[in-house]
Amino acid sequence: MKTSESRYCKCMYFSANALARKIEKLAVDSWKMIDLSPSHAYLLMAVISEPGIQPGGLADELQLTPSTITRLIEKLEEKKLVVRTTDGKLTNVYPTPKAKELQPKMKECSARFYENYAGILGREESYKLVESINKLADKL
Image 1: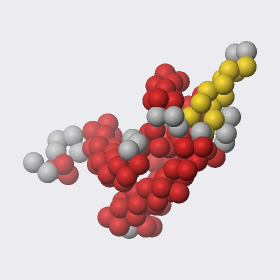
Image 2: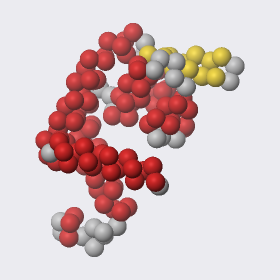
Image 3: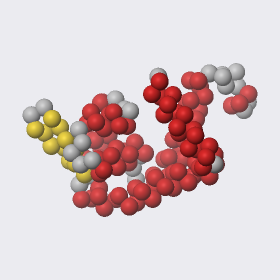
């Protein structure tokens, strides 16, 4: 049975998750070159663009729970891509030189991901879809 013919095709939960699974596959394929999951890569790009960012800021920016952010940071620490510093109750996350060296490849992976989905959906449709999803997520 095709997805569009499914009895659940008008349910936002099933439709959103079907889309998420397909987008996840495209994203994972696009990020294989640097051996990072998309979540790790986007967190790392945020840390590179704002050295010293706090985990709460990462959680807000990436719309992930604090516990998920902690797990992602721990994995990036194991790979020697970020370091955390603590000053009292404040924790800051910084990129390592190794992470900064990855930045051009991360930009390439990000561009490849965009080209993959925009090539399927079209550039205008992709832009509109992302814009709509962001608006809907903000409302919910």
